[in-house]
Length: 432
Ligand SMILES: [Fe+2]
Ligand SMILES: [Fe+2]
Ligand SMILES: [Fe+2]
Image (cartoon, rainbow, N blue to C red; front, side, top):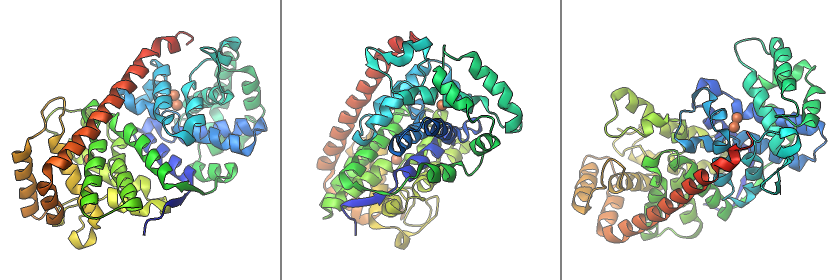
């Protein structure tokens, strides 16, 4: 039975997301974890208290999360060079909506602000967190360190490049802190190690904590925006699926914590889309067969991201099975009806319903008759759950209005996000 509190290690959640962010291309492999690790070592040298170090590690693990929302190619870490203030601000805007991440959001906001020989200590009359400058330095070291050569061979060249920008780009005291351990092989080998995540988890001392259900709902809302804002085409999709799922679940008699968990599952159902290239998500019209093959992997990635987090197993089994079909023709597991929890069958219906009713830039959403025909056909073909489809058709107007309301609210949030993102870009770039 769902409980009102979830015992979860926030680092598990964050590192899972970081790995997803890194899946976007081989060039970004482990970028987030490496930045988190390098930043951690600098903070450790500066004797930061454990709690502050952990916050910096989480900021490092999520620092480029805003790059998803820029609708630009993420390959080759291009976003780090072209107008870098923009992805930093996008990350800040997204993460600051979740209270427990406020500190992390503030650090991420200025992770590309140059030190400017002291000018970077503050921005717009406000102190810039030291963590931002640590991330800036860690980020550059992580980018300079390539897989093309053995790590230790690269140390001299990397440190020369960093020294060259001492004061102008990087705060001198932080360069000194870095220099105090760069002669130690272990630092470079750990940075490039495939076990970097467990090294970091142990070194930083992350422990599971209780997250209230309300916090989890808010966290999933934040992730819902990261997923949806990746593409203007689907900017409100998960919000629509979540509202439809909750409306259906309420009619089926679910209440309280179960309803909240259903909302979380639906908010996260397309989490794996973060690993899908924008070109495919944004293609107007029909995908080629090869593109379809890539697109359909997103559900497996939703499963993979949530899988290591035991506390979220129910949420995973509800949200990550939304492309399964009762007759076994779905994916990625090809489960059949008896293997699918009722809530996952419910979210599957909500997903199809939202996808065909919502407006996309290249087509209008379908009307009641067509939607009913499609859902009935899928039900008769043994794909969708009859109990849920019947309920939806019986209550079409109420559910559809709830969906439209939620997607309108999400659209307003998306427009506000775009306004804040683009409105402040120039002032951010001045110093760079
Ligand atoms: Fe960045
Ligand atoms: Fe970065
Ligand atoms: Fe979906």
